[in-house]
Image (cartoon, rainbow, N blue to C red; front, side, top):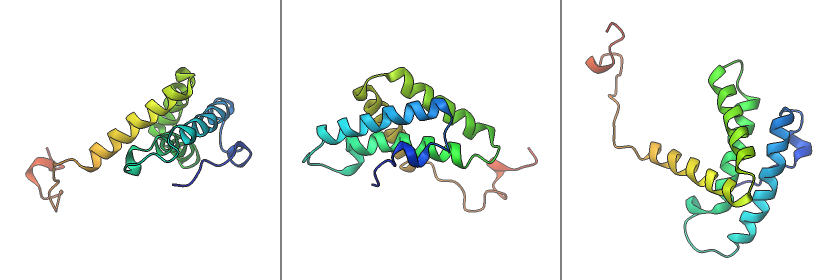
Amino acid sequence: MTALPPLSEVQRALDENGQSAWGMLLEAEKTALALSANAPGPKHNDLVVAVRVIGFFILDFKQNNRGISFAERAYRKLVQQVHSARDHKKIIELGSLLQNHLIRACMSRVLLPRNPISSPLLSPLQ
């Protein structure tokens, strides 16, 4: 997975709080690199990936929200959670939590109907 870009590359995209959180993420990424150096196992459990998940979500929510309020709320919430973590290991734990939720969503056994419009469960008339 690509490393988080330096603050100088994302500074224009983020507000002051986001820039502050980005600095914390960069430091947490360094800590994660040190902790997971030569660690065996799958990358979906990698500490570095956990930090980068937060970073790239923050960046994407801010850069691509196009006036969508849930993206702006998600951005603010993630920035707030990074600030409240205050510790590199807590930031890594937050990233692991987000990563696990994303993986669970992708592995859900709930299958949507092939044609959701004609499905009686998802009828737009109800």
